[in-house]
Length: 103
Image (cartoon, rainbow, N blue to C red; front, top):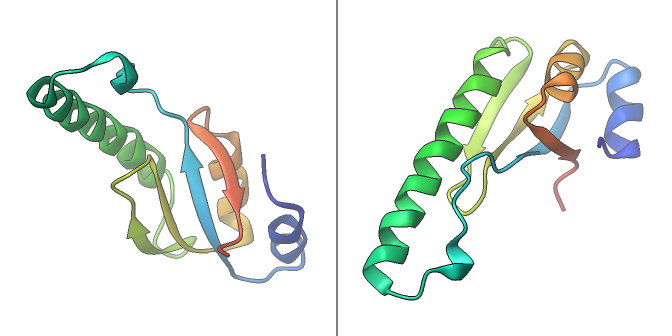
């Protein structure tokens, strides 16, 4: 899903600030873990898997298409400025859940 405002700006050829939210492909469900030490270990596994997903998506974008600003720790995603040429690669990625304008 891409935010309508972002899509319009990209279609107009503008460089747009976005937050890209990636699907959680980690397979780690923290809600069922009660022990703090096990939860911390599972959270680290989740972060590692999310970083792998992030790296795969980012590897498909050139520095000319994406000016990366931040990578997030609490969820799988990143922010930055993208150009229209990056739209197709990012949207068509099976790992992308949403592309939105920052609040």
